[in-house]
Each structure stands twice: as structure tokens, then as C-alpha cells.
Amino acid sequence: MICVSNPLLAEYRPPPGHPEHPHRISYVREFLEERFGKEIVSVSRRMATPEELCSVHAREYIEYLFSLNAETYLDYETVFSERGLEEIRCAAGICLDLMEYILSGTARKGFALIRPPGHHAGYNRAMGYCIVNNIALAVQKGLQKLQRIAVIDWDAHHGNGTQELFEETDRVFFVDIHQDNLFPIQSGAADETGKNKGKGFTLNIPLPAGSTGVQYLDSMDAKIYPLLKAYKPELLCVSAGFDAVAGDLEGGMTLTPQDFGAMTERICTWADEFCGGSVFMTLEGGYRIESLSAALSECIGVLQNWRRHELGR
Ligand SMILES: [Zn+2]
Image 1 (cartoon, protein in one colour):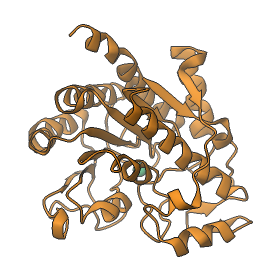
Image 2: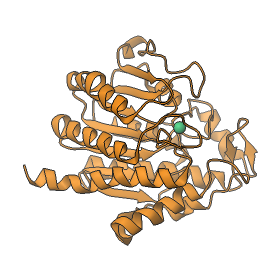
Image 3: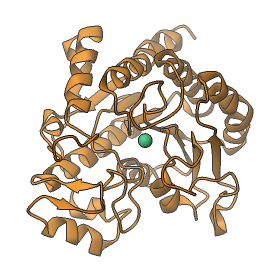
Image 4: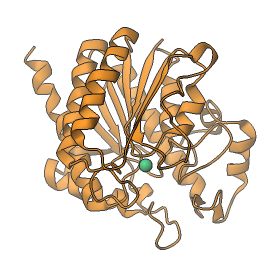
């Protein structure tokens, strides 16, 4: 298991009071180092190139981002900071590095500890704190080598950007379990199941506000597992947001940190069954840093200890 980040991402400063703030990375990193030791986080200094960013985004959009050199609001809440370009290229670069580690067999499981999040970013637009779609970039890279990749998005919000980018392909199975009608409004309904060749390869599971870990795990077992078993993905990728944890500032679900450990166990068990144990995870939301840290460390703990299970086989 490898957890990859870069201290640079803790320097990205949106305006004071913005929920997507640098402590999301710095506090979490300290928390993880305290629990698992200083060496738990590896540093990637790779910067995604314009060409790499254009593998999922419109060239005009990427050129626009490269033309910015001052703090700019890309929508009412999505801020491109003064050093925004460096930061989004760094976050995307970490995801690309991690995907390479997994594809090459350097690591079987990995977590990209990054910000800003990416799953609302679409082909030619930023949205909801997301500027480039980090997981989509990694998945697109994975598709150079693999035929079928599953993406499971358990952030409290619907990963509309990721859905938009892959809804017309059958090579990515996109599964999104989220709080019904949280953000974006009217996005992620159960009848959104993909388009054209991708019809049937998108699964949305909207759950009511207040849902518990039991509801998430039941949905994973009853709805997600049978579909993935039939799909036979070669890699499981997770948009791991932690804003469904109870008390989060932006979500309204009631999961405990331990529920995220249990969900990660499901993912690792499925990965053993489907794809030789390969798991790629990346941070999306999670806005109360104490609960974000607690839930994320449960997840890392499972990834970290899974080798024990593998060796026992
Ligand atoms: Zn979210």
C-alpha cells in the first residue's frame, strides 16, 4: 500500500473561511503520521502536463486555466488560487503517478491524498470546488493498459463530472452512492444509467439524508457487488470523499469513521475476487477535519493491513 501526497497541496489558499482549505491535507497528514508512522505518506512531485490534462478535458478549458495568473472565481464557490495551476497540476500528477505504480505492480493498493477534489469537474468546466477531474485522469491513463475499470464514488455528493466523462463508454463502470439531491441539485437519480454504448454502465444510488453505514454497506452488497461481479473490472478505483461522516459541514449523512473502514474492506475483498487486489483511491470531499482524519485513517488502516490477508492466502 502506498499513500501519495505533496506538501505543496497544503499551501493552496482559497479565501478565508472557504470550506476547501489547506488544513484538509496538513491536519490529515499529521493524523496519519501519528497513527501509522512518519513514512506513511510518500511524496510525488510530478506535475501533470497540459497534454495529460487534455486527455479528459477540453483543450480550450485547459488553455484557459493555463492563462490565469491571479485568484479567479471559476464559479461562485470554486476558486482558482494565485498558484492554482501549480496546485491542480500537482494533484493530478499525484493521481497519475499512483496509477502508474498500480499498473506497473510497484504497489497493489494506493491512496492519493490530494486537494482540491475533482469529481464535479466536467469536460469543459469547474464546479463545486473541483477544477480538474483527478480520478478521471487516472482512469483514462489506466484505460491505456486495461479494458475495464470500475469507479465507485462514495462522496456524499454526486460525482457528476466523472459520470459525464465516462457515461458513454462501457469500459468504465461508474457507481455513485450519495445523498439524494444534495449537490448538484437534480443530479444522480437512479434512472441515470449511462448513454449510448455506456448504457447500463452507470449506477446511481441516491440515499436519503441521515442514512447510516448499514444502509451504505447493504447497498454495496445488494446492488453494487452483483453488477461488478458480472462486469469483471480489472481495477477498482474509489472517489473517496469523507463528507458522509456524521457531523460533516457539507453532508447530512450519519456514517461513523469505522463505517469507512468497513466499506474499504468490501472494496479490498472485491478487488481480491475480481482483479488481483488492485485498488486505487483518491480523496474527494470531507470538510470537518477531525472526522475527515478519523474516517480516512480507518480507510488507510484497512489498505495497510490488507497485505496480511493476502499473505495468508
Ligand atoms: Zn462531497
